[in-house]
Image (cartoon, rainbow, N blue to C red; front, side, top):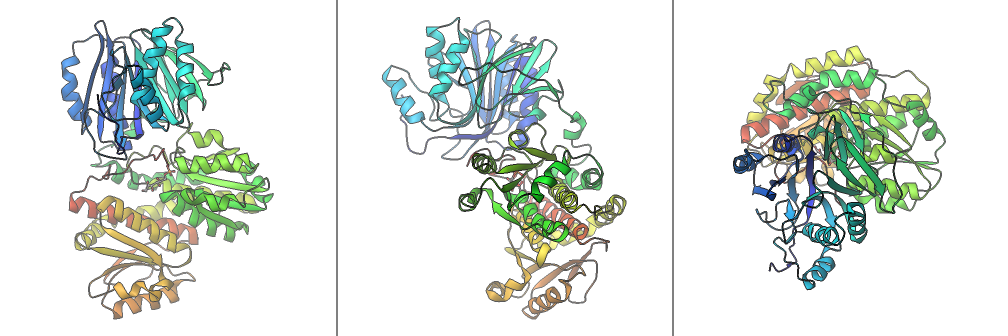
Length: 603
Ligand code: F6R
């Protein structure tokens, strides 16, 4: 028996995929795992239902490791299976803790995303009844509970599944196969995403539409707090409370080619380059009911912009955008720090929730809280069908296309453009950005890639890098710092240029690299004097501006544009490229930085 220790393995932010259909389970699962790799993971595994029972393979490390291991199953005929990429938060990572997990008799296998908060209590209870656990995960309890229930009522999988799900506390999405349920995959979701790809004679339940795009673009997004039995080409679903659900098949408007690297070495580099197209797309195409969203904002007594990470930096830019273009006072709130803001949220408030994935747990929790207080929610989302999209009263799709690199790049520029369009809808004015000009300017910035790659060589061994800007350029300094940290693993700090003298200047010595965002707008003169203070202390200054100045040791020119918010979009691109090339120089794993996951589905 494996003792439960306090460093138990909590399984979070994982990828889930299953297949039930016509004998090609292994192929679909392995391809699906490849597609899920972008989310970040430390181990992977799969289980197939065969004539001789359930066969499981799982391995720490890359999906390639698992593929090698799974070659023993190549000749096994199987039409039903489940698979998983795992990303753990606590304790070590081991084959034993990788998913799938099986029940004692091996007749049930499950894969799970989320946290079972009451697992210790459930595990103690199951052990008392003689169950033997083989991992330290919270997830394994699901396999043992299902085994008990299915053994008790093998002809009633719906009853068995409902009764198990009602015992679980936490947030979860799981799918399960069993020797009692032949071609059926049992699944459930509670505050964690689960969608089913639907094809002729097959179904693919998964945590993410990108994992099954090459097989089908028809999808059923399962309701939150629901259970499902997925059979080849059909799904039955009901709320945990027991009420039957009417399911609708939606078309996923993403081409498989959009998730390929298309000749680029890394998704991240491709996505930086994609911006020449995505900025124009977000600027010109239908993003959804902007007018309806604008009406909500016009009537709001308080507006909150809730987001995490890069999306929070877009919210910080959004604050300027809404103030300057629509005279709306919006308060940016970090989703993980929303608790304080919550006391001011009421029925007259509007929460604008910004999230690329639409699955960030802290954002969703804030949204649920806001809704419970009667506030209206505008979701600004990239992934179609996401939980945020479904929870929002009105949602705006930023149309950046799938973002596979863990570091957000093109979603940031599209978020900012969507906020500019929203602000213009509020004030009833023409959108202040010109699509053609913006596309041309992005191109001009990208043309400086070789020169930026050279600067990256000089900066790659820096211990610390500082980035400064004033006003709306300060959030870009924060975003640039985040890119350098997560891609190149170099410490970087973004700060308002005017704050330097209040402390951080003490850290500047000969050769300390400082990136100065200094476009020729109302911030120019003051930022330039900060730049000279930096020079006087020996800093190596990298100027990013439409205007050269002799105090810059390195200079990246961003074109002058007719709109201040366009220059904001343009100055982030050299920072994305700089972080990318620093990472390349340092040999970092660019598309999947260590310890990070694309979608942070737990708090
Ligand atoms: C940084 C990054 C993260 C995300 C954050 C929020 O490059 O990707 O900081 O921005 O996890 O994710 P979304 O936007 O999906 O809510």
